[in-house]
Length: 93
Image (cartoon, rainbow, N blue to C red; front, side, top):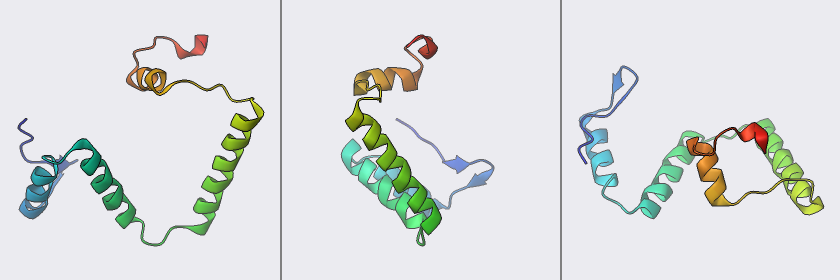
């Protein structure tokens, strides 16, 4: 696959960044995923305590919904179809 020169909007990456990206794209999907997560995490050096708290509250609420049986769970395969838009009208679920 030829990815060419990568750009974000009208801003192009440096040659060094392009070289790193080209090398990273040769990694396994698992390694690319770990690398991407590490890079994203490095952008948020000082997490906002209010945001972290809100996410923790959201996660706890979702876990409670699952534990109580009030959440409608779907398989990962179904979730992928929904994300990709392959499942038709989701409002009929």
